[in-house]
Length: 368
Ligand SMILES: Cc1cc2nc3c(=O)[nH]c(=O)nc-3n(C[C@H](O)[C@H](O)[C@H](O)COP(=O)(O)O)c2cc1C
Image 1: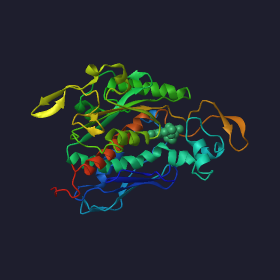
Image 2: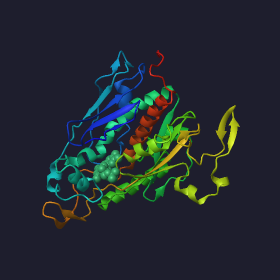
Image 3: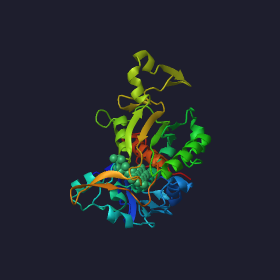
């Protein structure tokens, strides 16, 4: 398997499977001199699983982040940072019975073809949502680095199924509220309705998807490496690598296709002596470069593939028609857990590009 690394100057490699011993990440290229502790990593990791367990899988791991290398006397050294989290709550019993019955919507069938049946199919193996733990611990390093340069990345749930928060949120509301709601929606009343919808869906043996919005604030103008490492292209790539992501939009996204140029163009203005735009229809990126405005992304997430409702499939051993009802522990909606994974993916790409564009030096000034 290749394709487990992302980023050029701030390069992240992840490893581990759902039911293996550990999941982890190696972050190579983090500048020296960043204050970094296990508590920083744990802080982000603790946001992964909502406290309201009715809306998530029954697999509740007491995830503990460990830093194995690359930090000395509290500061990053510039050497690779190895980070791990153990898998403790593994139950693989339900996977033997369905190993020849590829779950519709999951990666089982193409993975069995590509890896000749040698892939670890327990819990979805390398294709499990569990691998987002590795993204989050690597993303925690990226976020800490970005925060040194005042860049903030904030993701939150906009919709679950047909229930959509229709408010425009301020950055402060998102920052304060998103992890208070189990569904990660900053509108707490709407978040509660989303929660009920997820519980009802689960009772029907079904699952539901939704949308996550993400904004990156204070990214300076000029970040990105056109043509082929454009900032939007790299962000989209990272976002599509989060399991279950089926769509990514920037700014007005697909809605922009219906507008005229005069309606879609963001007019330039001078604000506090700096160039800004009066609207942000482009989502903060022009020509593959940040333009100094907030980078706005919207991500579509599909309903969880594993559902207990019976579905048609085939038996890849007998090559006959079959059906499958997926038992075991599954998230009825992956959106709440995808929120920090999306935030982390965006942070990793921004850290990489800010180093590449020279906005972040290889050695930081010593912090007290
Ligand atoms: C945080 C997270 C948790 C997930 N949990 C589950 C789950 O419990 N059951 C499941 O079938 N899929 C789950 N998924 C989705 C699958 O991992 C994903 O649909 C599958 O790997 C196929 O990849 P694709 O949807 O990107 O094509 C989860 C995804 C994420 C991001």
